[in-house]
Length: 288
Image (cartoon, rainbow, N blue to C red):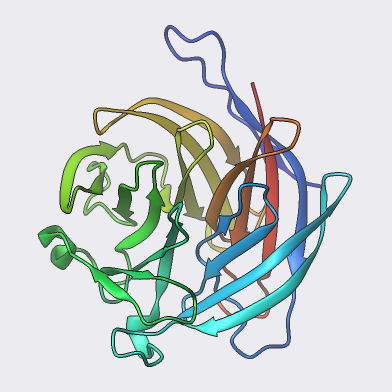
């Protein structure tokens, strides 16, 4: 049975709180040697086709199949090595692809945390172009940098590191807009949660997936959403907090609209290439 703790947060001046309600989950398995370690997720507008990236520099593509709204299988799961600027497969610590955002024109943006950078790809088989870096990227912690990446309807990129530098320091949000990086806002840090994935929903809100590790107790996840006004994050809403072990290590998030008009939040877990973990797709519906 799914063990779930949902927090209903009543904000001053709001008509009521929103929350996420569990819908279904599906464990994805494959015998392909490169399979696993998925840290990001992007879905098509109808929630069927997906892209993901892995810690070992792999693009994953496929289709999610549902019956009566429940996840039942993954089809056409294709794995493609991510190429570097030289057109060759990215190797070693430089391949740790953590964030993914797909522009309206189909260009894929990928953020990395081994070598702190963002690359853009015309397709999963193409060599990339480098997105200019912000000076602050060079000062980020190793293995804890550009975890979350999202793109808004105007093509602005939003990214943030997994670590802020101190328990009392908020997570800085960097925005790449009109050819330059801005750092106008931040996200508060609390309760041991660290940002691992982000997406803009059809409602225009910024959805942030956060993770907390509890040792043998497993992982807990938190989902928050924000409105964006003049490059500032406002109206912070906590939609979901799971108890440790409810799901595996959820790291990728995608928000989409169903045919009925409701919002769905789909997430994918990073199994860290360990036999005792699993790659699972998890879906929740947004409840007004």
